[in-house]
Image (cartoon, rainbow, N blue to C red):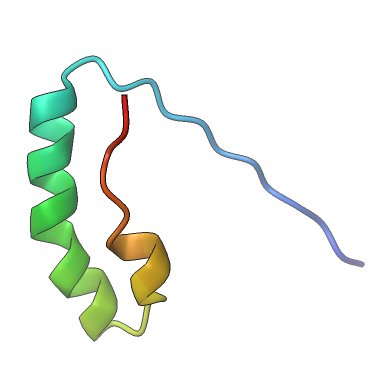
Length: 44
């Protein structure tokens, strides 16, 4: 039975979130994540 899970995130500190994204991206890519989804920049 297929299903879909939707997750939301409220970013309250865009600068800190951008830092997190830049630091986590290499780890996600090393684990086989799609580079298109890990390298997107935070847009306001």
